[in-house]
Image (cartoon, rainbow, N blue to C red; front, top):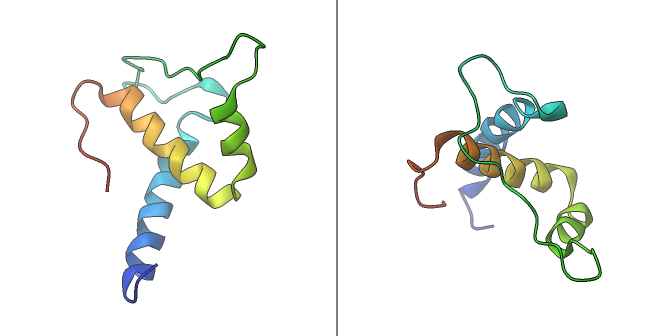
Length: 83
């Protein structure tokens, strides 16, 4: 992380944590229906390498990524470029 990015990154993570909470237990608030459902790639052996990779990350990073996935599910096709 570069100097000066800490505060912005922290604010982004907090925002994404809020988005992640909307999908806790597979539910979202009223008016927040998913337009598409994200799924993990599964190989022929039934392994999900992306899910395995996500589980290896720190909770804060997993939550941030989960928030982005939630935003895509909810806002598709009107999604912005990643930061």
